Image (cartoon, rainbow, N blue to C red; front, side):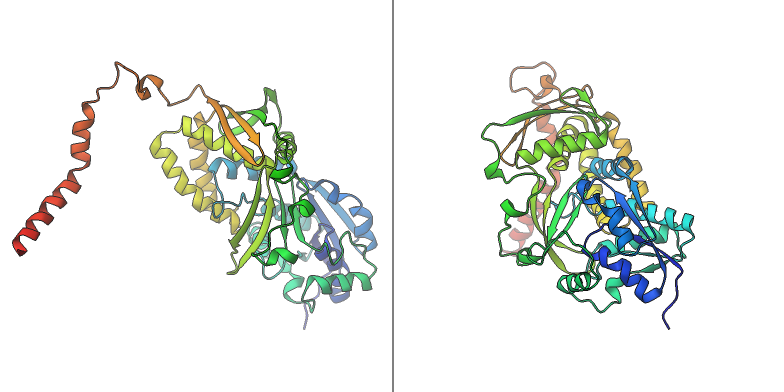
Length: 408
């Protein structure tokens, strides 16, 4: 017998999935549905949600502004770690889900809800990200995932359901890409992109910028200032994190920066193809990495690269609120104490080009590194170093020669 619920809190975006879930929940559970839309920077997508949610059956809609929390609690820690999933994906959807799910739990508890529902598919990563966070903050809360239990099998059938229930949609069957937008990025999946042999129709799908071919013929120069690994100013103007990312999105987008066409390995076992737009984030990641090459010692820099791989997996897999992620963030924060300075970049037709880096904590000593005459480096010291460093290679070669001689 199907379990009964009195009140369900729904993670609501107003997109295709969650638009039809409101009436579906009421039809199947007879419950009150409270919709929660998290504002993580998706902009105009939030327009008209209040009216739409109520018209489709929700008793109320919360619109929660999480942008500042999203940037400070999720984006900056991940960026400081240098975490990139499979060398390309800057984790735009991945690290937004935990902060949204955390607020869902808070509202569900305040409302006395019996369950939390989401519109994630049974094939995707987001179901894991939402549910692991719910388990972390409300381990006994029931979770409803319609995609795992209803009879609807495709986005076409979802549109059929929406039309039958007079639910207005902003998409058509021809423009029915699966998209996720927030302050950090925009993802595109589905339709022609499901075949990796197809080149993306950039001129049709891009929303945050232009293709490199359509970018200006003259470069744009910018200077980013970092304090302890966090960007705090653009071209000498101090800015909060949200404003800074928005500004860099506009600048980067106009210059064709931050496009990634990826076939990635999902957590649930399959490969998927997506096109990502991350203009501002790509600039920030690049600038931060450049500054670290100046300010971190070799051993820390190289070890941190190993940490970044694990950090990216944890974020991608929805394990944000875990002891290991928190411990790795503590390590990363320790490494960032001297990552302060200015990074100048040239943006040109999709390229981010270094144009000069300055830091009061720089470990680069021109007097030591110079090819000109100096008084601080004795080049003869390298002979003894090479003899010791190469000793294992020499010993093995000598012994191999002896063994070979005995066999003759």
